[in-house]
Length: 105
Image 1: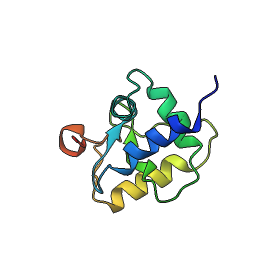
Image 2: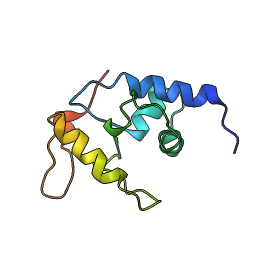
Image 3: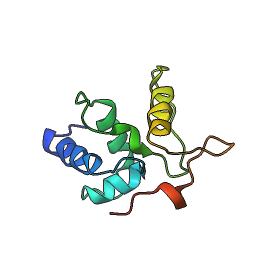
Image 4: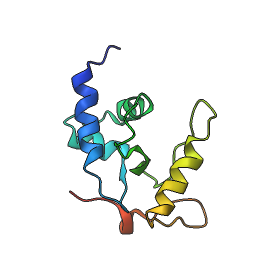
């Protein structure tokens, strides 16, 4: 599948709006970017991201969990640490209570 750079720019534009101390889901980003049902595409876009100013770490899965990285790298640990630095708390199962931290634009 060929994805044009405008599609990724739309995704990055939504992610850039997520405030500090809040999270959103891949699916919500897709909907806000005008691509409902394309949560996986959001994941692809974020994995290709090279701009450190975009808060990629604020996007989690629909269960409020950090998605495991397919490359086995430390991205999931980095993501959790960055969220904790912003005051986001995890429960005993490693989930973020979305009722408390979900961004509602």
